[in-house]
View (cartoon, rainbow over the protein chains, first blue to last red):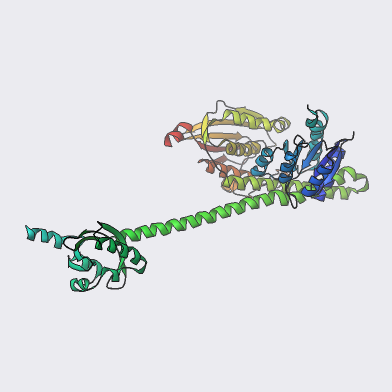
Length: 139
Length: 368
């Protein structure tokens, strides 16, 4: 089965750069993009049968914020264990605390340069996509 | 006997009087005249209700009714019109004697106290307004910080990322000039990102909630040296820590920010003439513990010793010694926020000894 990651991001440059970083990191998972919170929720609702292996979630999004999307995800019985990795430029302690309180699995600050973003893509691949048994599969 | 009591009545500083059940004064002492300006005969011809301030009238009517029916003693603080038109605050208490159809009144001029209370209340209101304004400004600053963090860093990330992509993926299609330009774009974007991060750190520090507690300096210094291990190795810096460094009464996260900047400076401004060497130690300075970070680098001319702790102050070009000009301003702000201070002893070519004074734990805690 194809591994896919849902990337929720409204900034088109970040979408391209993140895809580039995953490519440079030789990550085989396919990045599926949702450009706002509503699209993220509808994508996840439609893919109930084959959810993504993890979600990369920006916080500052048009219409509903990434934190609201996260809160929605945790309320869905079939998605409550889906790994959600916040990938945002917000350094606000309030955002970080709230994300973890709402059940984020990790909180990553968007790195300022491509090299670090490539490293981050490798880390996400190793930690969440390869060595970790997907939480939804845990009996 | 009666005459002696009358003397008390006449000489009393407070206003004493006897009124009929309608509140009209029948007998009164001279204090009334000195407080309200009316003569005795004038006061006997007017009702207290005529002099009372319109806002206090309702309360006054209630008390008078209470006294008229002989329901017991009554008391009131109210404003009464002076003959000159101004108002005086009077506190009176009165006791009815229904059998005699008389009311005994004791009154006191409390205008100075009331004016002082009024002033305190108005100052308090002013203080509350200022506090609210400051809280609002703080909120705006927080929003501004957020905007710096998010909105300004986002386009920078694109600039840096795509410049890097040009260098890595399109280098075959670019001339050497094109490659150089892309390198410059990437370098500037990274520099500006560091600048934004330092500015954020500085403004956060200025507004941070600082709660000091005692801690030993040895662990955080060892931890911070661990973070620069690679630079220390690459630049062949000999680092000596004269442990134990002792304890301070300060704020650990802020201390780490302060010490990080001093340590990274000490391994940055290296002299080309000698093997770099950094020594970290402490001395006792009365109620302070002084942390010294000494290097044998290029040193600083005395005329720059004050200047370097200011925001955006740089003494070198960015190629030779890169930096944002915020580090030492952050060091000073951090030390001050922890109740400490900073300074430097240095001469060009002789290295620098930066020091940070932080409150010693015992003294600081006894002081609390």
